[in-house]
Amino acid sequence: MNIEFLAALGDLEKEKGISAEVLIEAIEAALLSAYRRNFGSAQNARIHIDRDTGECRVFTVRTVVDKVKDPAAEISLEEAQSINPNYSLGDTVEKEITPKNFGRIAAQTAKQVVVQRIREAERNLIYEEFANREGDIVNGIVQRVEQRNVYVELGKAEGILTVAEQLPREHYHQGQRIKAYIVEVKKTTKGPLILLSRSHPGFLKRLFELEVPELQDGTVELHAVAREAGIRSKIAVSSTDENIDPVGACVGPKGIRVQAIVNELNGEKIDVVKWDPDPSKFVANSLSPAKALAVEVWEDEKIARVIVPDYQLSLAIGKEGQNARLAAKLTGWKIDIKSETQMVEIYQEYAQAEMGSELGEDGRDEVEV
Image (cartoon, rainbow, N blue to C red; front, side, top):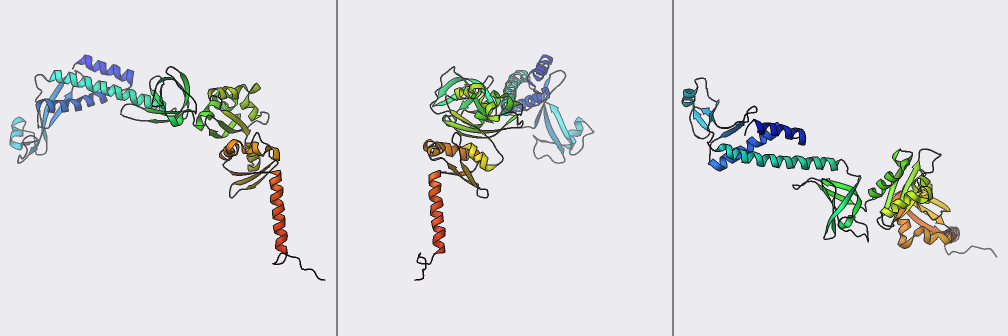
């Protein structure tokens, strides 16, 4: 090793952001292992690389003791003082023992250490870059599909879209450009593992934030998302400006904004509803496109009973209960949906029960003749 080598380390420090001093310390540690491996020395040794010349030297390190028990690690006071009279008990004595052919071993070892540290540094930089983007959308190119897992090229790194995070009935092929949501970034020995999703509720939220300027500037706020990926979703929005309709802003002129998102999600149906601080109004809105006639709420239990016209009962419940299920997820309330006719029957039964409690135990009025 020489001055040119030190200069190269300085260039690496500027280009890769790896401290030259850290690299030199790592090389010294690796050289110590290489020395022991190649020369089979049981002695305590120390490797020193001169920071100015790049010269590499090997030293034995022994402690001055009164009585030597381990010659590889200890030296007697008498012998130490024969080297230098100033030595006393407890001091360390160093002696250079650099082998003649150690330069070649040092060069090979240094190269290996530097290459390894560069790889580690690059992996850390990539990890930090993508870790800071958790919860964001990335664009990538499908690299390959293995066992239904999709591997996506993201520039410097590779992400994985597992089966559970894919949209139903969506197929992927090599070279296809896709958008995905970064769910989590993990550190591994082979570099960062970037977990992607197209079914996560956060993906839908970020798509709206990218598509709707009012969400970006804070004029419109997105409060909640309920999603059954690939089939149907609901989002709840409100406006900080009374002159702006939050639902209209998200839908866009002639539905252009929401349609762009529907297209990205391969036809997933999206209901945009207005959020309201009043639970009864919010629950009523959440059942869109069905219209509620009345809403009764029990706030302690977070239960709501919604009354809808007879002809809209199936619409409010939805296919296989989907609309009601999404509304419950969106609001966080348990929702019981009843038609007008059902409620009339319930009230009649209640009224009859009340009347019955006012009668005698046999259920008959007592009439004098």
